[in-house]
Image (cartoon, rainbow, N blue to C red; front, side, top):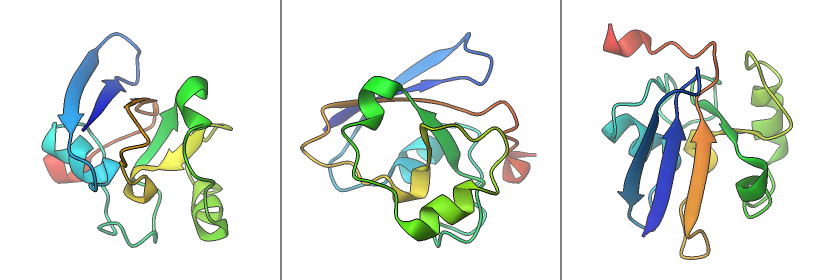
Length: 111
């Protein structure tokens, strides 16, 4: 299990969830009601699951692939610690992970 903490775009709300090993962050975020659309359903053809990983936790993740970095170039408010949630696989090596929802995040599926 990985303890995942989601921080709202405005930084005012935090939600903690226990995520089973072997799941990806996008699935966990959507199950928790977070506003990550994931339009391409994890096929890395969009950037609608963009999250900002805290600097402390960013270092424990495997490097982003070149294809993921290309998609992040299209993401609004991308930072050095940006990742696509669909590409973060939660493993036993990740005890906890904290991510912030970017300010421009809009889940059109939830409307």
